[in-house]
Image 1 (cartoon, rainbow, N blue to C red):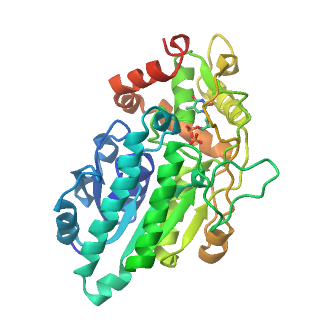
Image 2 (image 1 turned 180 degrees about the vertical axis):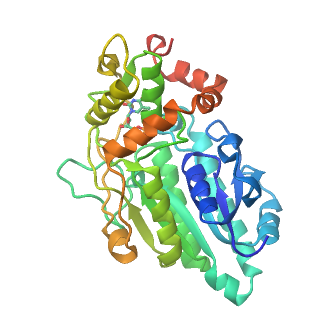
Amino acid sequence: MSASVLLVTGGAGFIGTNFVRAAVARGERVVVVDRLNYAAQEGNLAGLGAQVRLVARDLAAPGDDLVRLLVETRPRTIVHTAAETHVDRSIHDPEAFVASNLLGTFRLLEAARAYLAGLGEEERRRFRFLHVSTDEVYGARAPEDPPNREGDPYEPTSPYAATKAGSDHLARAWHKTYGLPVLVTNCTNNYGPYQHPEKFLPLMIYQALRGRPLPVYGDGRQVRDWLYVDDHVRALFRVLEGGTPGGTYHVSAGLGPTNLEVLELLCAILDRLRPRPEGSYRALVRHVADRPAHDRRYALESTRLQHELGWRPEESLAGGLEKTVRWYLSHEEWWCRATGEDFHRWLAAHYDAELVR
Ligand code: TYD
């Protein structure tokens, strides 16, 4: 493989899969490094052919093979999307998050540093390490607070957010200390095809299609700034093409619906596309016990990305939700693979039996 290869960690997970599919459509060749745990599926990359090579590897595991892989494949870019991402799982099992998000990022940064040291001047100048992160590193915003801007202090709440915050700091430190050309993006809640059904929107679709309750934590008035995954992927390409090494870029559509409002939209779409004989899906909404330390609101300002790099979100929430529902309705096979033993164990451990029976 030549120097035009992209290496994508977590490339068989949700955001990674969408990024890899877009990269292939742009004619790129991609090396995916993914540990293929419960949230990833090899089948997500099916049909992409010889443009994609999949290496099954846990980034947190020690070993020189990671540097050897970089030297052998000579990527001009590393896009680091691999992470444990489900807040509720991080509350049950924080150690998995420390391992993947902190140790995994550390080992990848070290491997990139060793690889870069062996590159010629021109290749070194072109190389980029894109660290993909989240708005959750900032912690909750009060209703009257302005959206977070790049450079605001980090105040993570959950073990998930704390480990992502730590990984952002590692990435920036490797830029400052070792000159690694790191770019950091923080994005708001994503939704779209290939998202694991433990997450809010696909879980609600999964439950609705089975006529089961839709579990809303607490009062359901928590606010998230939802972004359709394709808009996120386009932002990542813009940052790779034009971002300044050492820079941080927020990715957001600037929306602020409550969870109940999102669910209302979702139920209306399902009512239209897959009507239930018993009446609207809204009747399935159930308020359940809240998540501990549940952040009330996230909000990001993305003017830097918009003004400096010309990115704009293209998908409306209603349009993106409809595309998402249509994708899930036409990918039964994918659902079956994603909702195996591990998924049911998770539902049984986390939700009341009445909700998931
Ligand atoms: P989630 O997809 O877990 O993302 P995050 O917590 O990282 O923003 O959840 C999105 C919102 O939906 C969040 O406010 C928690 C809420 N939620 C529920 O109300 N019920 C659920 O079963 C889940 C998984 C999430």
